Length: 444
Ligand SMILES: [Zn+2]
Image (cartoon, rainbow, N blue to C red; front, top):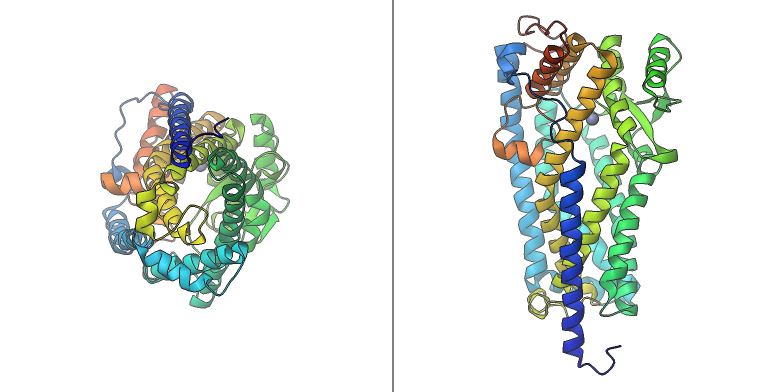
C-alpha cells in the first residue's frame, strides 16, 4: 500500500510501473514476431524479380504512370493527417476546439462523446480532399467503378464505424481513469487486448456487410472443385462467399477474415467474371494457406499484444505534466485530453505500419508457397500473379519507401520469381516468361 506517499511520488511510481510493462510487452512482441514470422518460406533458387520477363513495356509503363499519379495524394494525405493530429494534440488548439464543443455539456460521458465526434469529423474532413483526389485517379485508370454518391455513402459509413469504435474505447478508458486514477493503464492494456481480439472476430459479421453483400458461390464445377481442394488440404470450409466488389472496383481480390465461427473465405465477383477456373483455384489455394495456418488469429493476437504495449506507452504520454500542459488539458481524465491521445495513437500506428507490412509480406509469401504445394501448378500460379498485378495496376518495382509504407504483399514480380523458384526446387518445368502473352481485357 502506498497510502502514505505524496501524490507526485505515487504518480511517479505508477509511471515507472507502466514504463516497465511497456518495455516487457515490447520485448515480448519483438520475440513473438521474430520467432513466428516465416522469414524464408522458400529457399531462393536464384530467380530474381524482373518485371520485364512477364509484363509488356506498355503494362509496365501504365502501372508506373498509375502509381506516379496515386502517390502524391497518398503521401500528401498521410502528411496532412499527421500534421493535423499533432497540431491538435501537442498545442492548445485541440483543447480549445474540444473545450468549445464540450462546454455546454455538464456530465463527462456526453462531453467525451462530443469530443470524439468533433475530432473524428475534423480529421475526416482533413483527409477528404486527398481521398477524393485518389478516387479521381482510380476512376481515370478504370479501377474504380463507383459514382460520387456511392463513394460519399462509403465515407459516411466508415466515419460511423470509426465513431462507434472511438466512443466505446473512450467511454471504457475514461471509466477506468476515473475509477483508478493512477493504475488505469493495467486495466486499459488488458481491455485493449480483448477489444482487438473481439473486433477482429466480429469484423466479418458486423462491419463487412455494411459495405458489401455476400452470397454463397453457386453450385457448379468451380464450387465443387474449391470445396474438394479444401477437403484435400484438411481445412474445414463449408462455403466460399462471393462479394459484390464490382459495384466499387474492377480490381481482383480474395481474402480470409475472422476466426473460429466467423471465419470466411471471400472472393471478389470481379475474379469470377474475368479469370479462368484454374486461376481462381490458385487464388483460393492461397487463401486456404492463410486458413490452415490460422494467419488471421495469429495476426489478431500479435496486434492485440501490440495494442496492450501501446496503451502502456500512451499512459506515459497522458500522465506527462509537460505534454498535458502543452495540450491544454488538466489531466488524462479531462475530455479535452482526447486530442493528445489521438496524436499518440496516430504516431504509434505510423511507426508500427512498416513492421506490420514487413511481417505481412512474409506471411503472404508463405500462403503463396502453400498454394504451390497444394496445386503443384507453378504455370497457372505465374499466370495468375501476372493477371492480378496487371489488372490491379500494382507498382511492379516500388521504391524502398513505397514498399515499406504500402506493400502488404510482395510485388507481382517477386511472387512470380518465387513461383519459378518453387518449380526449380521441385524439379518441374520452370514457367516460361509471359511478356509476349498479353493479358486479356487490359489496355495495351
Ligand atoms: Zn493472402
